[in-house]
Image 1 (cartoon, one colour):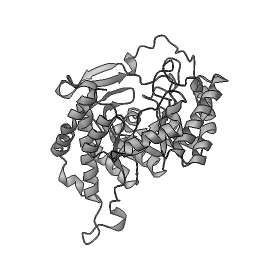
Image 2 (image 1 turned 180 degrees about the vertical axis):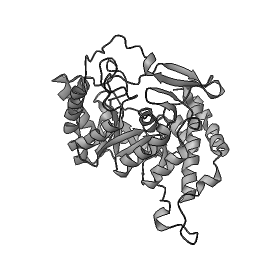
Image 3 (image 1 turned 120 degrees about the vertical axis):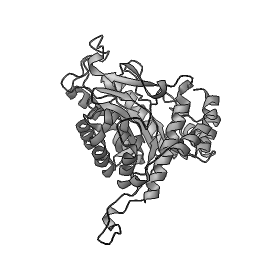
Image 4 (image 1 turned 60 degrees about the vertical axis):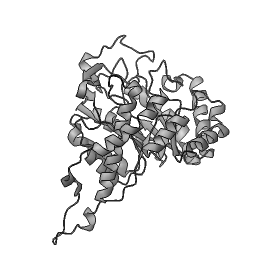
Amino acid sequence: MDRRQFVRAVGICGTATATLSIDEGRLNAGTAGPNGQKTKASLPRKVLMKVGTQHGASNEVLRALAAFGVTNICAPLPSARMDERWSVEGLLKLREHVESFGIRLDMIPLPLSSNFITRVENPNILLGKSPDREREIDDICQMIRHAARAGIPALKYNLSILGVVRTGSTPGRGGASYSTFVYDKALQEPPLTEAGPVDADIYWERITYFLKRVIPVAEEYKVRMACHPHNPGMPLDKGYRGVSTVLGSVEGLKRFIEITPSRYHGLNFCQGTVAEMLRNPRKEIYEVIQYFCSRGKIFNVHFRNIRGGFLNFQETFIDDGDIDMLQAMRMYRETEYDGMIMPDHVPKIQGDSGGLQAFAFSLGYIKALIAAVAAES
């Protein structure tokens, strides 16, 4: 990341907020009673969510985020291994550094990233290879304990073999490049990954084994565990390169949250990824948000828009996709979601190194949407 460019992008966030146009007629939520007043059942709920991000924890980045008005973040991965940076002292130092800028450290990643299985930090958990699997899970459990003792309330992670699969890009607004996935154009070569054939039963067994070990520790230490869905979802009958993406459907996510009934077991809810699972995300996404959020299973939100749907989509600018993002924000308010709303993947703009300007635009847009639903309430 070019930190100096990120700092220079500060002004763009303010511009995005100032120029965002929201139809005032849409701000009048709820239904009126017989005399024109809003009924109690229709009164909007108080806004509890806050803008967040996952850009870094350097002085320059934190100074820029503080200027943006970002008061909650997910810091970068402390280390790929259980070392001094994952010690209680190391994590305390990280938290205190973030807090010195007036920003709360809400979450950090575990070394279970969204990389392909040969590049993920702890591959044996999903390869099911013992005794390395047990050693890696033991390290994850110790990281949970240390995070709790350092006052860090949540951890995010992935349980992915395939990583993030895309097939290319599509020209978007202003000549920007929109990351694209079309299943029929995906070259499944070689036909199997290094994990070999992983059908749904095998995948569920490995996920369950992991959860049964780590969620009791998370519950004991009161640390929320936020898992990212598989990105993207694939056909259940075909999968992709021999892998069944069991966390790539809404039904799979419902099954996932029921494996261990704990208030500390939930989702890093990537709205863009979930929209990619749906055949008609323009209509279906709001009900999905309501389902998981009303059950207290959304611990973090990646607030991303797409165009298209299941097996054929583009990742657009936050205001250029099929999803009504104001209506989505209303749903988080109505279900009393109190976590971070953060930008996720952004389109590539020529000359915008690292997508910093695009991220700044997204942050401004999110702040404006939160302000809009706050005005409704």
